[in-house]
Amino acid sequence: MTLTQLAQKLLSLGYPVAYSHFKSTQEPPFICYLVVDGDTFSADNKPIHESTLVDIELYSTTKNLVAEGKVKAMLIENELSWSYEEQFIESEGVFKCTFTITLI
Image (cartoon, rainbow, N blue to C red; front, side, top):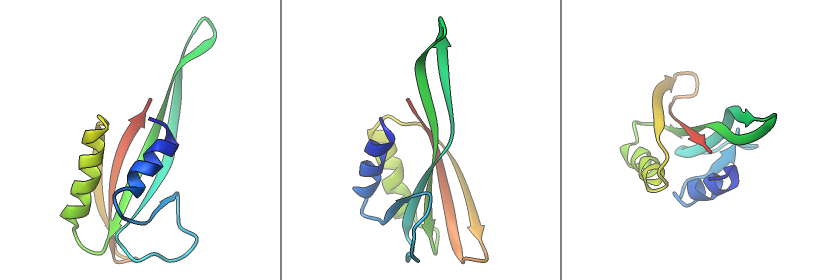
């Protein structure tokens, strides 16, 4: 899956979506996604395989199991495994749920 395809899948969930950040204030829930790392596997001095580590960040004012479930269902449907981390950002009054995936 490409980064563009991921963006389309995220948009299909029905929430505002932006790469990295929005240019204007958004009301939660909303999603930001961001490339956080990448790697290539090479042989004979040629890159053969590229992987991209992407964070999908779901922001909400309360613990939003419905929105989290939609993200998880999309990841499962597209056979993408993830790691998960959650934190409350007190200064913003929002929960940030981060799903880290690898695109190949």
